[in-house]
Amino acid sequence: MQELRSLEHPTLQSSAGCDSVASLALTITGNPSVIAGADQTICAGESVTLSASGAASYAWDNGVIDGTSFTPTATATYTITGTDVNGCTATDDVLVTVNALPIVDAGTDQTICAGESVILTGSGATTYSWSSGSNTNPPIQNGLISHQFYVLVGNFILGIHGLFFA
Image 1 (tube, rainbow, N blue to C red):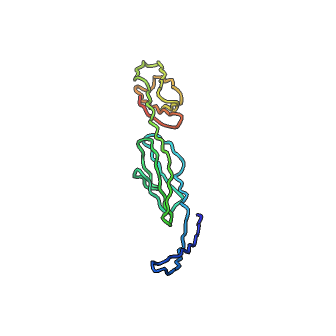
Image 2 (spheres, one colour):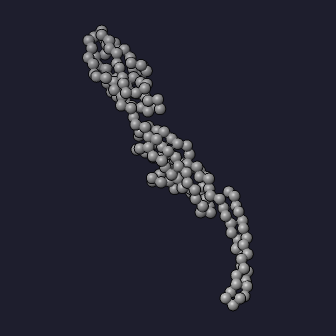
Image 3 (tube, one colour):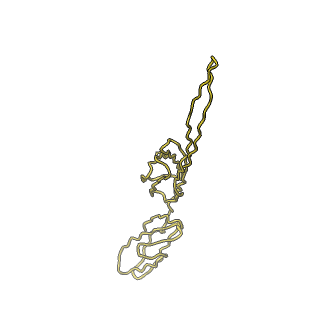
Protein backbone atom coordinates (compact mmCIF):
# COMPACT_ATOMS: atom_id res chain seq x y z
CA MET A 1 0.00 0.00 0.00
CA GLN A 2 1.41 3.36 -0.98
CA GLU A 3 0.84 6.19 1.43
CA LEU A 4 1.03 9.78 0.29
CA ARG A 5 1.30 12.51 2.88
CA SER A 6 0.67 16.17 2.44
CA LEU A 7 0.77 18.96 5.01
CA GLU A 8 -1.17 22.07 4.17
CA HIS A 9 -0.85 25.40 5.98
CA PRO A 10 -3.64 27.59 4.67
CA THR A 11 -3.89 31.12 5.95
CA LEU A 12 -7.33 32.11 7.13
CA GLN A 13 -8.46 35.69 7.44
CA SER A 14 -11.40 36.85 9.51
CA SER A 15 -13.85 39.50 8.38
CA ALA A 16 -12.05 41.92 10.72
CA GLY A 17 -8.82 41.39 8.78
CA CYS A 18 -6.98 39.24 11.35
CA ASP A 19 -4.90 36.33 10.06
CA SER A 20 -4.74 32.86 11.54
CA VAL A 21 -2.87 29.73 10.45
CA ALA A 22 -4.39 26.25 10.63
CA SER A 23 -2.69 22.92 9.88
CA LEU A 24 -4.22 19.82 8.33
CA ALA A 25 -2.47 16.49 7.83
CA LEU A 26 -3.94 14.58 4.89
CA THR A 27 -3.07 10.92 4.36
CA ILE A 28 -4.01 9.30 1.03
CA THR A 29 -3.81 5.52 0.94
CA GLY A 30 -4.05 3.27 -2.10
CA ASN A 31 -6.94 0.91 -2.72
CA PRO A 32 -6.55 -2.78 -1.87
CA SER A 33 -5.51 -5.22 -4.61
CA VAL A 34 -8.52 -7.52 -4.54
CA ILE A 35 -8.17 -10.84 -6.40
CA ALA A 36 -11.33 -12.89 -7.04
CA GLY A 37 -9.42 -15.93 -8.31
CA ALA A 38 -9.27 -17.78 -11.60
CA ASP A 39 -12.31 -18.36 -13.80
CA GLN A 40 -13.84 -21.81 -13.25
CA THR A 41 -15.67 -24.34 -15.43
CA ILE A 42 -17.90 -26.96 -13.81
CA CYS A 43 -20.58 -29.46 -14.78
CA ALA A 44 -24.23 -28.82 -13.91
CA GLY A 45 -24.89 -29.92 -10.32
CA GLU A 46 -21.30 -29.48 -9.15
CA SER A 47 -20.32 -26.94 -6.50
CA VAL A 48 -17.65 -24.24 -6.41
CA THR A 49 -16.01 -22.23 -3.65
CA LEU A 50 -15.06 -18.64 -4.39
CA SER A 51 -12.35 -17.16 -2.16
CA ALA A 52 -10.91 -13.69 -2.62
CA SER A 53 -7.65 -12.24 -1.35
CA GLY A 54 -5.99 -8.83 -0.98
CA ALA A 55 -8.30 -7.05 1.49
CA ALA A 56 -9.47 -7.22 5.11
CA SER A 57 -13.13 -8.02 4.40
CA TYR A 58 -15.13 -9.16 1.39
CA ALA A 59 -18.65 -9.01 -0.01
CA TRP A 60 -19.65 -11.07 -3.07
CA ASP A 61 -22.69 -10.25 -5.15
CA ASN A 62 -25.37 -12.86 -5.95
CA GLY A 63 -25.55 -13.98 -2.30
CA VAL A 64 -22.18 -15.79 -2.38
CA ILE A 65 -20.29 -16.06 0.92
CA ASP A 66 -16.49 -15.91 0.63
CA GLY A 67 -14.92 -19.34 1.13
CA THR A 68 -18.29 -21.16 1.28
CA SER A 69 -19.26 -23.81 -1.28
CA PHE A 70 -22.38 -23.27 -3.42
CA THR A 71 -23.95 -24.84 -6.51
CA PRO A 72 -24.54 -22.38 -9.36
CA THR A 73 -27.38 -23.23 -11.76
CA ALA A 74 -26.17 -21.18 -14.73
CA THR A 75 -23.05 -19.50 -16.07
CA ALA A 76 -22.49 -16.19 -14.28
CA THR A 77 -19.91 -13.56 -13.43
CA TYR A 78 -19.47 -13.04 -9.67
CA THR A 79 -18.10 -9.73 -8.41
CA ILE A 80 -16.24 -9.34 -5.12
CA THR A 81 -15.82 -6.03 -3.30
CA GLY A 82 -12.90 -6.01 -0.89
CA THR A 83 -12.45 -3.42 1.84
CA ASP A 84 -9.10 -2.70 3.53
CA VAL A 85 -8.53 -1.52 7.13
CA ASN A 86 -8.81 2.12 6.01
CA GLY A 87 -12.24 1.59 4.46
CA CYS A 88 -10.91 1.80 0.89
CA THR A 89 -12.51 -0.60 -1.58
CA ALA A 90 -11.72 -2.35 -4.84
CA THR A 91 -13.50 -4.97 -6.94
CA ASP A 92 -12.65 -7.96 -9.09
CA ASP A 93 -14.73 -10.63 -10.74
CA VAL A 94 -14.62 -14.30 -11.68
CA LEU A 95 -16.55 -16.15 -14.37
CA VAL A 96 -18.10 -19.49 -13.40
CA THR A 97 -19.13 -21.45 -16.50
CA VAL A 98 -21.73 -24.18 -15.89
CA ASN A 99 -21.76 -26.81 -18.65
CA ALA A 100 -24.86 -28.93 -19.23
CA LEU A 101 -24.63 -32.68 -18.75
CA PRO A 102 -24.52 -34.74 -21.95
CA ILE A 103 -27.65 -36.63 -22.91
CA VAL A 104 -26.27 -40.14 -23.17
CA ASP A 105 -28.21 -42.89 -24.94
CA ALA A 106 -27.31 -46.57 -24.61
CA GLY A 107 -29.70 -47.58 -27.39
CA THR A 108 -32.89 -49.59 -27.26
CA ASP A 109 -33.38 -52.60 -25.00
CA GLN A 110 -32.55 -55.82 -26.81
CA THR A 111 -33.47 -59.46 -26.48
CA ILE A 112 -31.14 -62.15 -27.80
CA CYS A 113 -31.28 -65.93 -27.80
CA ALA A 114 -28.89 -68.12 -25.85
CA GLY A 115 -25.53 -68.32 -27.58
CA GLU A 116 -26.03 -65.13 -29.62
CA SER A 117 -24.10 -61.93 -29.10
CA VAL A 118 -24.97 -58.26 -29.46
CA ILE A 119 -22.94 -55.05 -29.59
CA LEU A 120 -24.17 -52.24 -27.36
CA THR A 121 -23.82 -48.82 -28.96
CA GLY A 122 -23.83 -45.55 -27.01
CA SER A 123 -24.30 -42.01 -28.29
CA GLY A 124 -24.45 -38.45 -27.01
CA ALA A 125 -20.96 -38.07 -25.55
CA THR A 126 -17.31 -38.01 -26.56
CA THR A 127 -16.08 -41.01 -24.55
CA TYR A 128 -17.94 -43.85 -22.86
CA SER A 129 -17.52 -46.24 -19.99
CA TRP A 130 -19.86 -49.23 -19.71
CA SER A 131 -20.59 -50.98 -16.41
CA SER A 132 -18.93 -54.06 -17.93
CA GLY A 133 -15.63 -52.14 -17.66
CA SER A 134 -15.31 -51.48 -21.40
CA ASN A 135 -14.53 -47.98 -22.68
CA THR A 136 -15.81 -48.84 -26.16
CA ASN A 137 -19.06 -50.37 -27.37
CA PRO A 138 -18.72 -53.85 -25.83
CA PRO A 139 -19.81 -57.08 -27.50
CA ILE A 140 -22.10 -58.95 -25.12
CA GLN A 141 -22.38 -62.70 -25.32
CA ASN A 142 -25.40 -64.35 -23.79
CA GLY A 143 -25.44 -67.82 -22.37
CA LEU A 144 -24.74 -67.62 -18.66
CA ILE A 145 -27.04 -64.81 -17.59
CA SER A 146 -30.76 -64.71 -18.34
CA HIS A 147 -31.15 -60.95 -17.81
CA GLN A 148 -28.42 -58.30 -17.61
CA PHE A 149 -28.58 -54.58 -16.84
CA TYR A 150 -25.83 -52.29 -18.21
CA VAL A 151 -24.97 -48.71 -17.25
CA LEU A 152 -23.32 -46.33 -19.71
CA VAL A 153 -21.41 -43.26 -18.51
CA GLY A 154 -20.64 -40.72 -21.23
CA ASN A 155 -18.10 -37.92 -20.96
CA PHE A 156 -17.59 -34.76 -22.94
CA ILE A 157 -14.02 -33.58 -23.40
CA LEU A 158 -14.39 -31.21 -20.42
CA GLY A 159 -15.10 -34.15 -18.08
CA ILE A 160 -18.87 -33.68 -17.93
CA HIS A 161 -20.65 -36.93 -17.12
CA GLY A 162 -24.06 -38.25 -18.12
CA LEU A 163 -25.63 -41.58 -17.22
CA PHE A 164 -27.92 -43.88 -19.11
CA PHE A 165 -29.22 -47.25 -18.06
CA ALA A 166 -29.82 -50.01 -20.60
